[in-house]
Length: 98
Image (cartoon, rainbow, N blue to C red; front, side, top):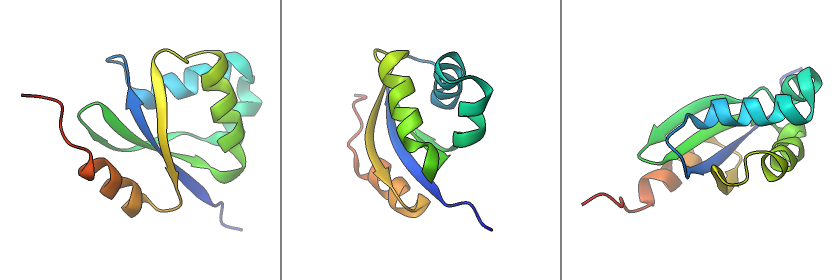
C-alpha cells in the first residue's frame, strides 16, 4: 500500500539544512521509531524557505519534536497535501534579499 505524504513549508531561522534539523530533533525526542514514522525528505528549497516531505502519520510527531527541541531554528509555515502546492506557496513568498 502506498504511503501518503504531507509537505511542510518551512522557514529556516538559522542557516542549517531544515531536513537535517527535523531528523535531528525527531531522533532526539522519539528515537529511531520517530524517524521511521516520519521519513523526512527535502524536496525543494528557495532562500530561507524549504519544502520537506513527511509521512502523513508522522506530522504530529514532527510538530511535537520541533516544539520540544529546535523551536528557535525552524518554523512550520504551512502543511499541504501536494508538492506542487507547496512549491507554489514558496514561490509566492516575496524575497527578503535586496
